[in-house]
Amino acid sequence: MLCLSIWSGGVLYGLRNPPKSTEAIQRQLERLESRFEDTREMFNPWYTGPLLASSAHVMHPGFFNLQPYFFITNASSMFDQHGHKRSTPHVNQLVPLLGLQAGIVNGMDATLVIKGVRNKMEQQSFFHWGDSSLSLGFRLIKETATIPALKLVLKETFPTGKYQHLSPKKLHVDATGMGAYQTFVGLHTSKIVWWVLRHPMDIRFNIQWSIPTSLSIRGSTVYGGTYDTRGTIHMGHGISTDLGWEFSLSQPWVLTLDIVYFYLKKITFSGYPGSGISKSSIENPFMDQWSLAPGIEYNLNANFGFVGGYWFAIWGRNSSNFRSGIVSFCWTF
Image (cartoon, one colour):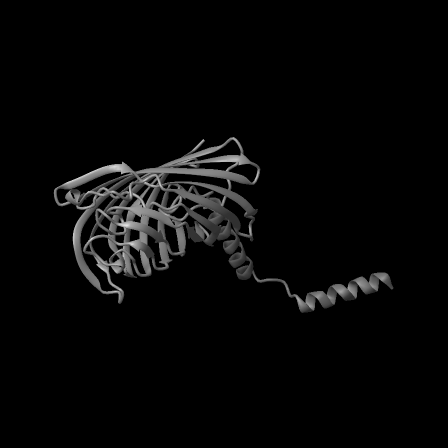
């Protein structure tokens, strides 16, 4: 009976699953061969990072990441409150920036950013320190094959730049900072995706909120005013987002793109505006802006790479219509 049952079962299986034809087997072998070739040509991608979006990964203790930037920016117009372009004096700006990231303990790192600012308008130019920042990053979720990385970032900006007692003779090009302490709370997420099998890509999304302090001003400042202005600036809170994308053409060559949006609430003033000017000339309305930053990377290895590109505004309100060339390299050691 057992033999009969086995024989019957085999017959029924054969009736339901007839032998594959030679052509079907050949097609299956060709598909498997194609998948094997695709898999063999896959690679672990090397990323320096898009121009602007920060990584959601935390540095391991004892490791460091050094990344200097050079921004060359030009602006000759701005967007008014309706999003229309209005001509402004031509300003050129050079910003050398140095970022140093270090792993502190497992799941936590720190990043220090210092920069200089050189402004030039007409025949006047000025170079000074800009505002600096220190941030702490905390790993919330570690990236896996199916889950993106998630990182909490707490950042403090320090007013190391020049923002008041500006010189009218220099056309106020000696302004290099905002004068306020600002606290930022951010969430960074990223995920490497094999969307097209041979060309992996890294997708990042950063969002952060800014919480600035009020600041006392004296004289002519980055916010306006004149020689005898005295009062307090009340900075508005802000929010910014950055969607970063990296597409691997090959292991060393990568295309990048950032899509950036920011919004800042209006800035108000209390105090004495100064001789011959009104309080409203110091206050600033809300501002927002959309910008794009396409770029290209070349990575020598997994720990060292170059990135360069072009960052430009596409629309905004009460904000600068700028154009900025960017070059950088990233070294992890």
